[in-house]
Image (cartoon, rainbow, N blue to C red; front, side, top):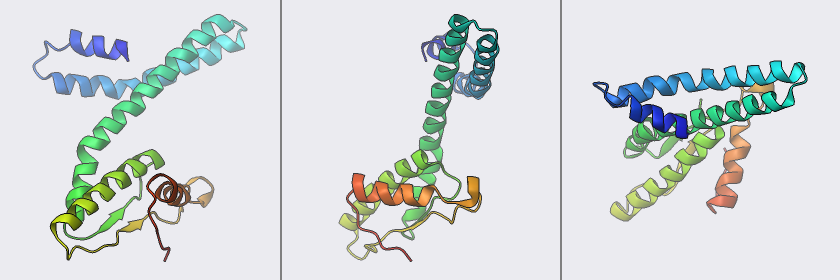
Length: 162
């Protein structure tokens, strides 16, 4: 993370710092995989010290890539989905990870609560579409049970399944 911040600061003399940051962010997943591959190579050579170093670096890059992906997700997707909620209380979670879906649900619930305060005729139920998991590993949905648990435990929301 510190490397990324230093790198963005060092390159901020570029004409468009936001574009530079995005270009660097695109390289983070490949840096993570390169470091993890080096960790496997050094581990197979029985050099655990160097392997550990590369494994740590790979994990840091992977964490940074996930963080950056969530920032981009929060800045674009969430706004679009909340805008759609104004006209109809339906949220489609197809194609999102469980973490992204939880974040999106949390924001959608805030939005619905806000809309209910402004418009008493706004529907009091939110339809959540998770899909059947046909494209998931093993063809079993991980999103549906994850969202159900999230709604019940973390948000205290009642839900009905149709």
